[in-house]
Image (cartoon, rainbow, N blue to C red; front, side, top):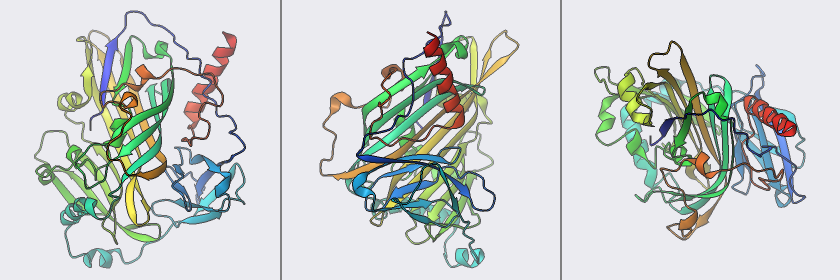
Length: 420
């Protein structure tokens, strides 16, 4: 992954409070705003990263870590339906007109029987299945140029306290999956709130911004995890099958071969049984080798500081439209331990980022023609964004509902703004 971290020592601790209220106000009368929560029918526990899509459109969003969602739907689509999908559960389709705000929507688990027979009928090994899936980029995924609207959020926490929040709406100029051309990202709107007093004498910056999440698209960018030669470094095995969209999904476990010392990935691949397309992947980096794993992430740091990752987790989800799959959502969670030489105590920092496709349209042009607004893979979003006080800032754009810890940080910022 091209996610890089800047650790920069600062000589003076400054408490910087942005002017952004980070509030979510009501949008104009051309849209209906729906809030709710997706939960398990039996356990009542929240379902995280559930997909919500509006029929006859490309409008969509995902639930947050509390199972909550916020969706803005044009009034022209009120006669449509809302489909809620979650891996291992039965889809639920609801009338948008009848949806009420702040309602709890339950999903029922889908039980897959005869898993052993389903796997046996596949007549290929787990590794062969993965190789076939990687070849499907030419047939199972969209091969049109698409202009995707996405919402991106980036947070930095010192232990459990939010120290930095950055959010942006971007346009992704997605190249066909069969093309070797890289995707482009255009910045539309961005804002941030950073409290450097919570970062002690270290300022952390995440390099790459939305590109880090975009590169988790394994099908478009297999070189970051499964290269033609590197795939031989992994062991693959079948896990228990599951369902999504009422279709059987194969589960493939993978991990690096035991004799290898370099940091590689381990996790699960979820593969649609009909199309052999990758529907989602959940994986982590093996960070047992502190020195080598640190070199993968740390771009710059003070000489008197030792920094190494203790966790690096990734997730990517895909969606279908007109029979073709495309990138839909991804999140990254990186945890680092920071040790100052000569000091007794260490600090723990967690950097998280997530990006969700909220709408998209087919485009005939192959290359973005707005070069002045394009981001670079070396972009540091917090250096480009600034605080805003406009309560209507996001307007009609769909966003990912903030989790409770972010909401708590937002309220503290608002209180301090009022005092000042």
